[in-house]
Image 1 (tube, rainbow, N blue to C red):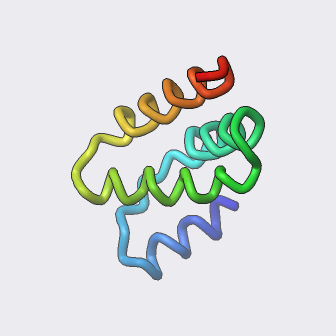
Image 2 (image 1 turned 120 degrees about the horizontal axis):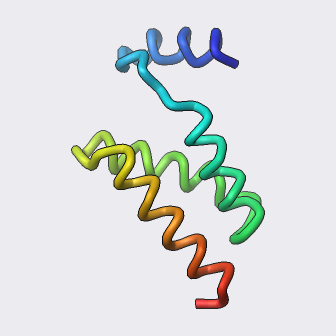
Length: 74
């Protein structure tokens, strides 16, 4: 996986610093608490938000907050 991410960031001309563990954790949380197919859409939208200037930690925290509320029934 690490080699693929390294090759992918190079191919897409992106910075190589990607926190794959955090993104996989977020995707897992969404898949288990919302819906499985929401996971890739979520990671894409986090990427869009980060690309638009949001700090990655802020984007991840907002997703986690939403998922907690979602699994609580809100």
